[in-house]
Length: 414
Image (cartoon, rainbow, N blue to C red; front, side, top):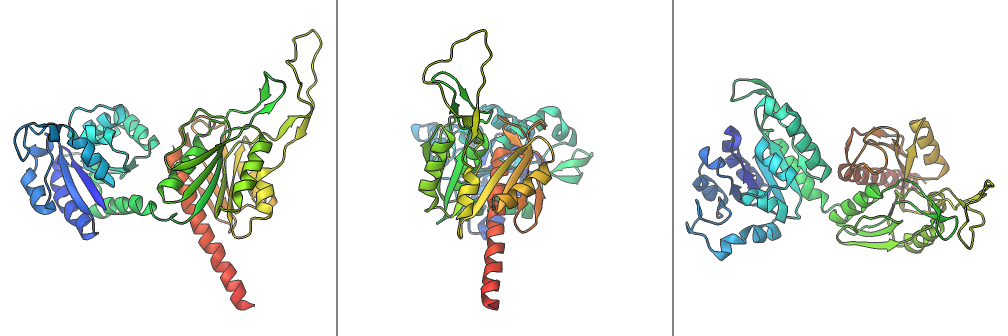
């Protein structure tokens, strides 16, 4: 894999030299990009000798570049590097570069490269303890996490400034493992077909009004994007939402619950994993009006009838397919989730309390617990929906391996 290593200005910059070696030992090609401040701590020549590649130090090639002068090639080099890199790693990452990444500031090669790249990003911060704990830094970190950036938390200990606490660059092994995890995650769903439902459904009352819910579709879209990034063929059946389809995902738009069921049944046969994240309307008007219901003095009674249960319908005849359902609850989350797991014949239920701040509709974050068919309950802290999506896929693959192992053992005993 081709890794671009960003080195920023901090005492820990010298540790990045050994990091180049560690990454090369894992079979990766490493090109180094240095900020101006980084060159105050370690020279580009060191990284050039270790990596065997040109070290990029300036956006236009005028400072510290191989040629020493700006030209058209150097002016667009950040685009070329962005297109060929498989992962951007920044270690050490200062508070300054974290702020630039979070706020979209592009005033040097590294910050411009970050905006131009679609590759996964891993950052390993290192700074003074007070800078690390400052509200501005923590806010910037939260922003980056919400965008899917992998943060390798700094370690605690005696810092170069003389203070003690969190802020020292994470151990080399931790950084390399984070890189491997991100890159490996891009391979583990190759050959799989993942069917995902997302968003709300709408049930017409009349040609103007309808019943729906507050679902934004963000969680389902995050799952679809993560599955595609990890190599799967992804079919996304989406209710009405303003979100754009993730790259490489086949989106099929529906409106009502019955339309979503038809699309799911049509596509489920080719899927190996079904993840049903849509907030489906449980009821629909029994007799939608053919014309707009006019305002009057009399009250209006709306009679509702139940919609088909999509999760239960597909799980009933799932065969070897793995089925993941969602439970948006307001009370008794664990009890209701376990009941749904059994009643719907699902393999995994992703449950949350939508009344908790940061876990309800339209947030970029979520707080969920994963209830698995094999009895494992995995409670996750508040994290971005992109991170939750990867955790769901991780647990689905783990669970499928467990279930297949039990099935094989049962057949052998027969």
